[in-house]
Amino acid sequence: MVNGASSEDAGAPAAGRAKGVGRRVRRNAGMMLAAKILGGAAALAGLGFAARGLTTEEFGLLVFMHACVLFFSKVATFDSWLAVVRYAAGGLTGEEAARANAAQLGRVVRFCATLDLVAAVGAFAAATLAAWALAGAVDILDRASPHVFGYLVLILLNQKSASLGVLRLFDRYDLVALNSLILPFVRAGGCGAAWAVGAPFEAFVATWFLSSALNYLVLPALGIRELVRRGLWAAVAGGRPSLAAPAPGMWRFVAMTNVNRGLAAAAAQAPVLLAGGVGGAGYAALFRVAQEVAIILGKGTAMVDRVIYPEFTNLIARNEGARVPRFVLLCAGALMAIGAAVGVGFWFVGPAVLTAWMGPAYADASLLAVLLIVAAAIEAAVAPAFPAFYAADLVGRAILARAASLVVTVVGFVVLYGAMGPVGPGAAMIIGTLALLAATAWVAARHDWASSAAAEAERPDAPAARS
Image (tube, rainbow, N blue to C red):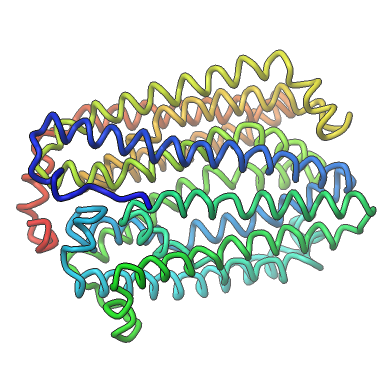
């Protein structure tokens, strides 16, 4: 079992705790990155099987439907795991969190699980209504409509955020990493079998649906198992589902983080939807292939910021917020270096790899993939700043940075597609991430990180445990 900060850490000198934080970040980030690299290889294999087993148009319809699910799942639901980590134990993690306050932990987890359920139902209703209303107006949606309504049921099953919070609260990144491998390996196996026997389009749709559903359903089981193992399940299950905030300021926090998360999801999923809208199913397929090459880096980035957020809450809770910028810069530099190496390598081997992997029809996606890798590398350098903003209660400023980047990206996507053709959206993605980099640097430079903990404690809505 991987454990969090021990009681010895709590009383250790700052230098010793610094080493402990760095050690945990490296260990957990390394574990998650290894899982994402392995899962990314399986995801690429599954994508290759689907591309070879389907026509370009069919593959475009499949990735478009999946982008619709991800868009509504992420835009209309909440990142409640952030609230679990922040409020369940007053910013503490690991063994300290388990010993802090069982009743408070139970109330927070119950609130977040209820929020996940209500948000999933609302997101499903919104997605179904949008698909029904736009089916006759958007060509690619009209062609996907026989299958898209059943595929949207995945939104109802995606209620894993509170469970993710429990596992991250107790430093169980080993279980999070293992769960992250379910989807790519099940999808690769199913798509490989469907391709081998020449199965129809519906078989690939079913494979993508089942792999996602299994990923969504296993994580809550792991979260419950961890609570039972620590003797905390009774505290969670001992009350009714409730949307009454168990701590002052909690609704404000989840609402603000949801807006920021929605903007991040729009930036990630809207390009595929825009590609299908402006270029049709064929261009959506090409864009998705290029995006998948870059998304391995992006997924690794997402895992890293989820690893370091609990550490940042710990540092600020201990009045050590001045150390946060250093960790942000170290993580940003490492991720940027990885992205640059991937981009340079793919520049030389991209066309041959895509032709061998996906088939000749997708060779033209190589230049677009290089541009998206560059954008992903820039975004990787920015990503560690956002968990620091959450921990320092700068969510509103994070939202402004995301919004500015999204506007630049969407406008650039449409304009540059018309001006430059298929590679134009790649340039738009780079411009959008540069806007995000500039905005986050401006926010970070204007904040006094040394006073983050004091300001948090003085807020009237600060959690009692944190104060």
